[in-house]
Image 1 (tube, each protein chain N blue to C red):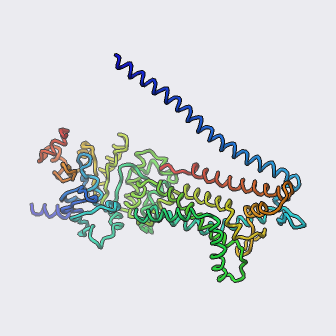
Image 2: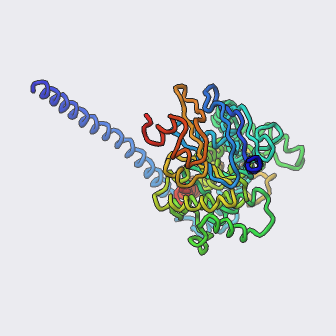
Image 3: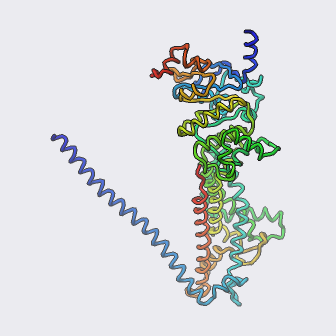
Length: 307
Length: 263
């Protein structure tokens, strides 16, 4: 009876401790979550507030329809189109590199590579992912651009092609690791069903595993492109600072991010229209990447296969 | 008598000779020899872990997919050793189909599931006709003929399993391997599959692994009883006509197992 009581007391003490512990942890984790939320909204508020200043001077219609971006040189013009086109151009070029190679690497790693090879491949990709973007920038400028000049002698030193190609290389690890996760999530029973019908490994990969993982793969692409859109350092270094409404990849362009850097480094006076234009560009950039990320996650959710 | 023997011999479609199988260092099957008769249902029974599924997977070289597996002995199919160097396992699998424990249709339409095997094997004929034939043979046609474009996962578990059978039948294999095909199904689904097996043996040779002895007794013509000893390595205890195995087993182990006196 005594023993029973002491056991009961000990248990009650333990319960009390777990209760307090639970509260403390809950509070701590909750505060952390709250901070990130506050920061997010603070950023959005800051963006909105500053760009309101901009949009009182430049109409939204002009912002979206004007075809020239010239914030400093007179006559000033604030048409976002050239910056969007530059961003778009670099992103599309990068996707031509990152999507096929990322997919191929993922298929190889998930479906073909024996464990030993996979153990080597993974760290290599992680190294690729860990290289600072500024290094990629100079790699594009000092290595890839001279190479491309052999093919396109008339190419300008700062150009969209070189930046886009290197950007593609840069996001390969990102695309391939997300894609590989999607492929690995496909249950083995489907692979076995395919093999049992006389399919080769290639047919199994391409006709069963990839379609079954399609939602995850598309999401990986979308999230990868979203990264490309938001990438700053590489394009600032290698793609140029010439806002130009062009889809010619060997021309010098300027992306939205690169413009923000350019002005932030320059002497745009606080409160001036040039200064505020940064925020207008930034908020559009934010909307673009945010919607792409949301799209990526929505695709995963909506089209998730129930195996 | 001699004539009868001759006839028996010509009816043998798969001949297992001294087969031993290893997963790495672990021996899963030891020295198994048995002949599978064409157009019969052969059941492989035995307690869990005795290697019956492993044996079944030897017939279509599915074990090749485990990198460290090794096989000794022979399986003769159509006068060819399916484990000889010159044989492409992919070809074997299009002649010896398989249905798995859990229904595993592809996340595609019902139609595309059945068409898959035809497509990868380069079938150039009338797809609609072949798919209808396979679905009729698997007793699923009436239930799905108006919804062939629906996703296979909209079907019930039992229907999914019959779809998997249709998928295997579509490429007209000679042999169909069933690996505990009803273990994930409810009784109604089970009965339908068992009825189906009885019909299918007119056109195909069927080898079925089951942990359910009643099922073996109900559906099979011949039964192989496997048992693993202390070393967990499966050996063939007895192989005979099902009615003999269940009414008059020669080995004490078989009798113990089928009467439930198995430890």
